Image 1 (cartoon, rainbow, N blue to C red):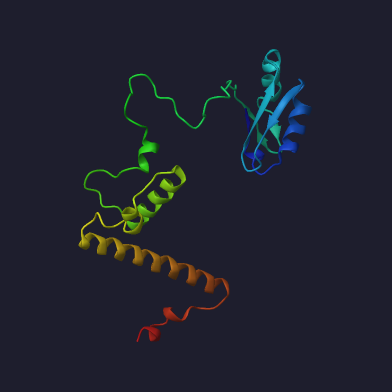
Image 2 (cartoon, helix red, strand yellow):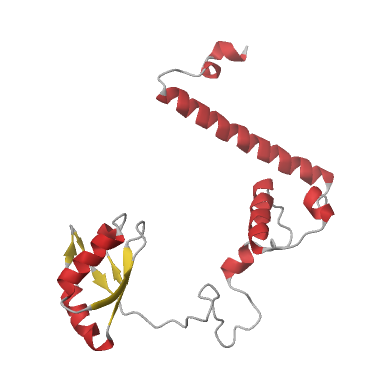
Length: 183
């Protein structure tokens, strides 16, 4: 694949045209997502070295282009599933574990619980009606109150910051920053 900081937000057809003009070898396929700084280019196996030599270090706009060798991918495999190395066995990787359970003794925030629920919806995890309607029921009442208090404080803090920023953009001062307003 090719990468360059100047590929970011550049349409695929412009990158493909540039690659075709610089490569000196026929291009079978060029794939690029506009927001990304890289493109995947397919050339014939016998043209790979000539392609690399022609584009390595070349400049696209103002940025240098890096060429890395690609690897064939099995079209029947799910590329999102990470294959486990021999010997690792049962332990899932850290990213998979992140959304499932918290460590022993950890008290999650309401934001943690909401994020976990979002990830479960996308993954198709089934929950009981009790878990859906009362997700905090598994925690003691005092812990629930603490979680809710933290959540409300964070929400009010964020709302206040956004309101203040918006009023300053409009050129006005919000009324609650005046000392008289608190009296």
